[in-house]
Image (tube, rainbow, N blue to C red; front, side):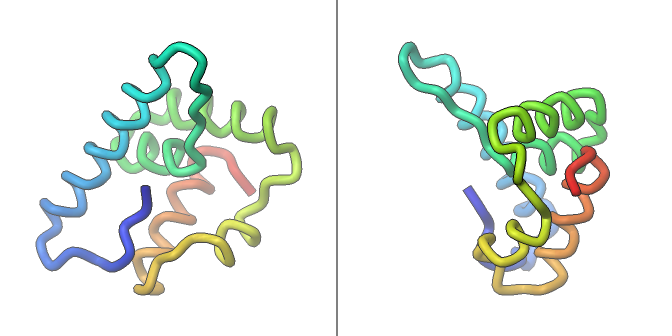
Length: 97
């Protein structure tokens, strides 16, 4: 779940990050449904949960060994370049390249 543009209120951005985390976590608990979010590594990183961010990054690379931030840069639907760069930086901090 990506934010398409930067919210006016930073609290809204924090809220949307948290909501994404909760939804992804809840979906992953459903039997027969495999959920991995390339955004989860960035969300954990932005929340200061580096151990979880690195674990999620490792899982992303296990499932998609060719994953790259260059690909993500092209695929993510962020309209605001600053929001995109913050997201990519959080993924870098999680260990993705």
